[in-house]
Length: 541
Image (cartoon, rainbow, N blue to C red):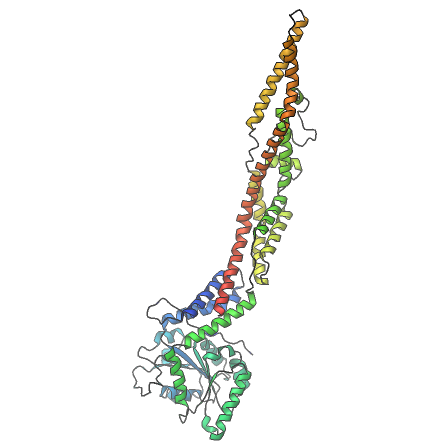
């Protein structure tokens, strides 16, 4: 069995001459277009193609003609389809008019003063297969007047010619209403039911089933035949489809069919009903394939987890620890008793010497992180973990789109993060003024102590004794030690603040790289998912 044909549907246009579609249908059509636009680039184009087709072809259809309702007659050889076409048109167009034994090509008859030339040309029906009712006298009553109708006589569905099948299935998508013509001998034939009617059960509201040649059934058995046909249709999922018995040869029931067609034309519902039905079908199909579950999206906790992961991969905690340790040593070395500095020119651990530049690169090297700095495996794992959190609740196609977006950014994240961290200005080359002040005081005290010692020495060689020399020597030498001990909390606190400021700078770098290269791209995918989800829900009705 072949796949059911996807019918074409009209869409709203901005042309003032085109009748407006009901607002709810227009909103659903716009919503489907929104879903297609949002999902494009993330999902398989083949999944979205039916939706793109219906929005594009429908809009083009109404631009050409919003005044016409296209009705297609389909049926098997011998069903009397062409005779019914002639009867509806009140003309000998099909069959004897062009002398064809079977319907080998489509014929079209358009009612109304303006014709439908452009519409029929757009459908690919040659001019020689078109007939217009605009210049002919029409004796139909108001109830059976078919102005605005474009009637198609399709090729026979059971023809042995492949070209006939292709022509029929090509034209079915353009129709607003489908009329399946069955005959008493083959109205239960599986060929038409399995290939066309059953697969298109979702379009029952724009389908009419005609039991033709009803004059061949005894009068007292006609209702039974129609009831049996309705039973079959109900079993196939079309319980409410319109069923009409006619005799194209005698004219029985033809006016009933005309009235049904005229009612649909006057109500201007054929196109809208088909559009609404198809929007429901297409949106439901896509929704089943890609999902419409509500998702939590990306939270601040997820972002912080990513930033922590990238910071760890870049060795930021180790670098900050080094900054704190080195800053403390430098602060103490700068503000301690100058004599003690002579014995502490180099850190005992050998990690960083006092005059080495405190750059991220040197600190990384001191921690053994390496020249490259950022560890690719750890950074990529952080990005993957974040992608998994961003994709929570999504169907497989969308979760794959999220992960693909994340994977495409991994190398870029590693390289950018390494470059940005290496060039970050941590402000560590600027010694705090307080440290210089304490250092100056230490030197003044040391000079005072040296002066006091020199004074004491001079008194040993005969200079008059003065107790102030003892005070100056003891105060100068011991005062530096006392000052170093008393100011140690301030110095350590200052070093801790320098480390905190440096950590803030490094964290800002990590945050900026994470947001620009990971968070924002994935938030874009999540936003597209939500727009697709909302569009499908609205389009589905």
